[in-house]
Length: 348
Image (cartoon, rainbow, N blue to C red; front, side, top):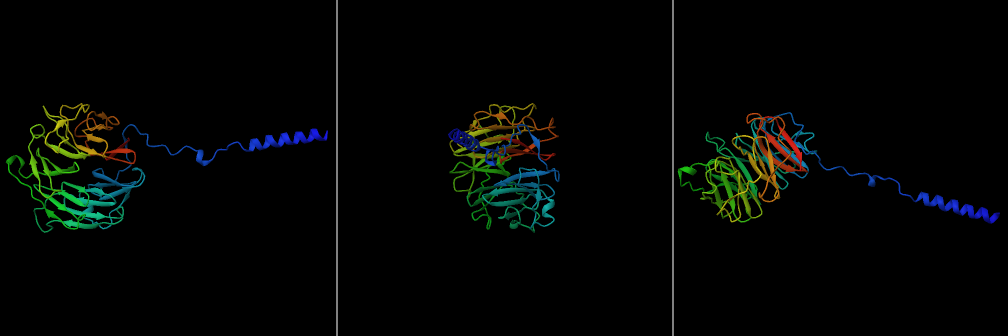
């Protein structure tokens, strides 16, 4: 009897220990925060100023430039925003401004006062670094600002300004104007193929620099010249340019030989409107994004094919209602800035 009792105790103890060793739920077993899943365009919670002119990011921080309220910052994918205008005068924050980033440094361009500010602390404060001809009545409006290492290029009317020390000093560059067809072009965008720098103008020309932006010369190529160019971007050794669509032309072209030849790469880009308005071409160095009146198309194969992203922008049934002016990708989302109703985003 004594032996039988001992056996029963051993059996009960073993069963109890086995049960105790069963896994129990822990925080490490809980599902991770899901990635963005919004597959249609959703409005971003920003109602302070519907004149949003640009967007950029540094890490998880998103910055936007507005038409009348300066710069705003979001750290949660656009759910909430704070004003970051310390260092800007009251007049600077009431004119249209655009924000750019180069690594960990922010740049702000006030497009009507023609000033450039710099921030090295995520927008906490700004310092002026460029104020061209402040006492002159003939200001050169700043149309674009692009970075190539420590070199910064400013696009203006008929000329380009260059800084090789991150904006401390600036010099006007040599632009040959040899034909009425390219008289006083606006330099609206710059890109590189790793060797050369290309500049797109608003009057149908592409310029090329072989000396890091010190001098530019127009490229002559009948397969692409003749369109109102919107942007030029580079992915590796390839250069892409977007132009206003018209009869016999395509919205996007590509060059793989330093701009000597261009091929249309627009298969899949469509529009319900009779004229295909192209408003921007951007890249995240892997994908290409092109913005139309109320649509964004994406290509992940260097323009060989395109697919519409997220459907039509809500409420954008006509040219005058809502024009996609800019597309930007960061934090798992693509953002589209419209001309009247602020910002929209879609997961990508």
